[in-house]
Structure formats: structure tokens, C-alpha cells
Image (cartoon, rainbow, N blue to C red; front, side, top):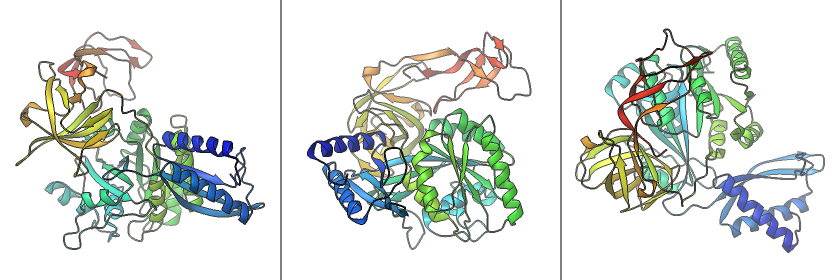
Length: 482
């Protein structure tokens, strides 16, 4: 990259475009690194020439170049650059992070601190901003699936600025200033709300999972259950150990030791990495999508220790899946609303394809298994009006001429090209992780597919070494286009 010929330049430009596409809009370049991965370093003149080439290529494909770090090796300087493609007006990269962990691990408190920019007082001040229900405020425990956002501009700076009077966040302003938005899916930690947590993990399609562990309590309660859920769904996990300001050093070390042992165990087979510097952040973020590496952050919501490392890591996360716009559209509904003056509104995740304003889609299945044509009246992303949404993006649609009572969670809106069919029964291979009783024919079970949660009754059952192959009959129809 120091002084490439025109042929080499074209080859490097094609390579950058491919890497940007693979990274869903961004990639990391290490200048001063050999093709074998060894960091040799470059002289000042060669480094500047390489940077000029990188900058020129980025301008060709309309991307920003951001310096992440610089360090010295035997042969000279080595620099890491983040190359992030420009997004259009009212558009941004979206990464979804599910937040799980045992009750009292500090999940809602951390999200309150990250999204509102204010440290906690140690008595639940930060989490009050996030709760949706009166009983959550009184008990301090999350019982529903909450959504919070953290926006980053093209330089990697946080753009969240709470209102000076009420302390509330204006999502529209955050999205207008952001090139990347992290959507946190705040899930319940209490065992009583496990079904709600399973719904959040399957229905909201998180790219990554943030497992919270209280340093003083250690690995207790639902921690292993939530980790097992993330592993079963093949969602990459990173761990945040909280409350390090109030935890004695020996207890903290014991918690970290148990955590590393759990992550290395045969069931997990992860490579735990303690993140203690910006260098660690860049290394772990670059290799995180492999699903083997598991970064561990140690933070305090009261003193703010290491929160900057966590924010930097979140800024470097890229969506795991790339989507093609030419595919038939499919949208999964996870909630419904009735808005005065607007009508029926549905929210959820676009699974694939492209949905535009005034498109006609098929909504279903209804209780009889039918799909009805429906027109999209308006589209909002993070409360901001837009003209279209693509695969992987969450959105809300206002629908024409339909009552809210006709729609339920788990229904889908799909392109007529898919010709969807509802199904009343299915066969599945099920691995029983743990169950106190024997599962036999006519056993009532709850299966979760995305946002769909049909109750079912098992029919014929074959049992082979802890694995079951039952046929299930649904109480309500499931969509058959997936």
C-alpha cells in the first residue's frame, strides 16, 4: 500500500469493497502488518504513504477512516484503522445486543448508565429511567422485554444526550446523528420470567449476547441457564462483570476464576480474554465473530471504571448477517399497538428483503390459517419516519384497514411471492437438557420459533439416548414460509 501501481490499486480497492460487504458496512485495517499476520512496523514516510492510499480508496467507496490505535514495533509504527461506509440520510447500521444474566446482576443499571451518560448512585438511580411498569419500579426487577439504544457517530463518539429537564432520550435525534446504533434488548433475570427471556432471545434476533455477572454474587441462579440459551442459539457471548467497586479483591478473583473455568468447559469451549486495555478491545472485537473468543469486561456503574473500554468494544461490533435486498420480503411481528389518530401499528424485525412505503404484503396466519393482503401506511425506525426498511432492521408499520384484535405476536408479513402456507403440526428432533418428569405422548409443551409461541400436544414419540423425536400438534397455526 506504500506506492501501489494502478493494477495493484484496483485490486486493493476491490478487496476493500469485499471486506466492507462482508463486515456489513465496516472493516478494520492494520497498517504495518505482514501477510502472515506478524506486525513488523513501517517508517514514518511509508506509514503516511500507506495512509494516503487507504484514505484514497475509502473516498472511492464513500467511507470514513478512523484511527483506532498506534503502537511501536521493531521495524517502526503499526496503526489500526476502522473503515466505515457512509450511510444515507435517516439511515444507520444497527446491531442488536441481548442483555442477560441473573437477577440483581446490574443489567438495567448498566443500560441506564450507557444510554443516559450518568453514573449510578449505588441505590438504583440509573435503572429507574428504563422501567416500563409500576411494579418494576417498586421491585427493581425487569419483567418485560425492554429496548434501549446507544448511538455512535462516524468518529466513534456517543451521541446520546438526555433531555435536560425530564432526562428522557429522544430516539429521533440520536438516530439522525448516528452512523451506528446499538439496540439493547433488556431481558428479565428472574427465573419466573424465563419464558419472557426465551421470547426475547428468539424473537428479537440478537446479533450478540451480553452476559452480566455480579462480581460479589458470582455465577448463581439463572447465569448458566442464560449462557446455555445463547450457546444453543449460536449467539456470540461477551461477559460483563459488574459491581467491582464494592467487591473485595479476593472475591473478584474467585468469580473470574470460576467464570473462566465455565467458559473453557466442554459444553462452552470458549477462549476467555480479560479486557484491560484498548489493545485488548481491538483484538477481541476483530476476532469476536468467530464465536470462539469470549471477552470479559470488569466495570463499575458507580465509579465508571472501564466503561470507556466497553463503549469502544460496542462501537466496533458489526452485524453478523448480511442480507440481500432482492430476496422476497419477510417481517416478523413481536408487538402490536393501537395509536390514536394513526390506527393499528405492529413492530418487529425484517428477516429479509426490502419493504417500502405503500407495499402490499400478506399478513398471517389468522386463527384459520389464512393470509390476508395488507397495505403499509407508514414506516418508522427507532421512532424516526423512513421510506423503506431492509433485512436485519427493526421497524414499526402502520397498517391500513385492520383492527389490532386481528393481529397477535408471532404473525408475519411476507411478500406474495413466497406463497406462505400455515402448518398445524410438525416433527422435531429435541435434545432434553433437563426435565424433572418424563415427556410422553399427549404431553403439553410450549415451543418458541422466533416470535411464535404455539402451545402444543406431543403425539407419537421416539426416544433415543436423551434425544426425543416427537410430532407436535399446534393449538394455533404456525407460519409455513420459513
